[in-house]
Picture 1 (tube, helix red, strand yellow):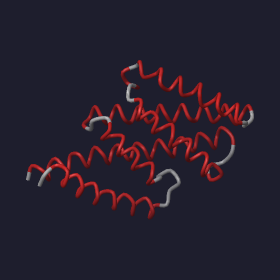
Picture 2 (cartoon, one colour):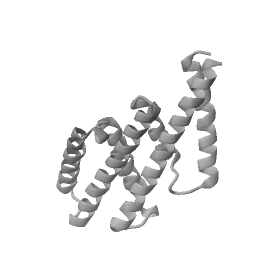
Picture 3 (cartoon, helix red, strand yellow):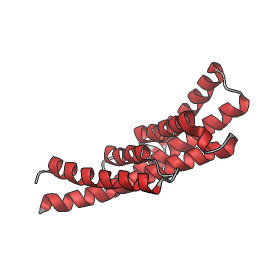
Picture 4 (spheres, one colour):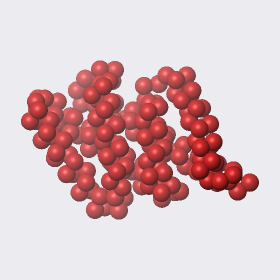
Length: 165
C-alpha cells in the first residue's frame, strides 16, 4: 500500500472513531473540529516527535494570545476600533515569539489563535462570561488541539506500520 492510501485509510478510520467518541462523550472540552485542526497542524509541522512538540506548543501559544486579546477586549469595551487594536497587538506578540525556536511554527500558532477566537465568537455563552469564561474557551481549544496532535502522532505510526506491510 502506498503512503497516501495508507494515510487515507488510517486517518479515515481514526477520524470516524474520534468523531463518534467526541459525540458520544459530549464533553464541551472535546471539540471534534478543533481536534481535526490539531491533527492537521501536527502534519503541517512535519510529523514525528519534533512535529508534535512544535505544533502543540505553537497551538497552545496561539490560544494564549487569543485569550489575552479577548480578555483585554472585553475588559475595555468592544468596538471595532478596540477589536482591531487588541487583535493587532496580540498578533504582533504571537509572531514575534517565533524568534524563540519552541514557538517558531507560526501557522500552528495561528491555528490555536483562530480556533480560540472562533469558539469565543460562536459559543462563549456555553463557557461563562468574563475572563473565567474566556479561559474555559481557551482550555477547551487547547485540550482539543492536543488530542488532535496526539491522534496525528498515532496515525503517523499506524500508517507507517501499514505501509511497510
